[in-house]
Length: 130
Image (cartoon, rainbow, N blue to C red; front, side, top):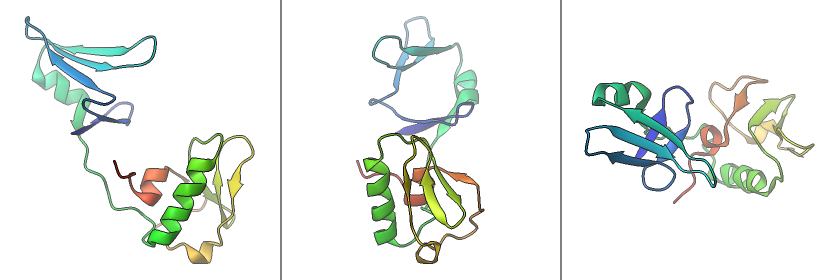
């Protein structure tokens, strides 16, 4: 099961990078484990939990051509520093330490794209297979 935090907009997988426990006192503990300092949210009702969290259903990728998605994903995975993918001036650029991938924009069909808008790799290529 995947949950999205409504405030941070981050997506977590329960059991992998998100732990949920109910305590004997009836509290709901949500823990995001990190190597040295976990983040813990504590709720005293299901209503408060649902105010912060919601089910996540992946959307269809914006890039329909699987070959282009695979090429973009492989380039993204190979980038040493990457935060987002941004379309600007006819090429795809990975933000980070001077790393960019050039794709002729005529090869990539995206419905409703906006020049200069920041797109996350999951929006463009879909989620990676687990």
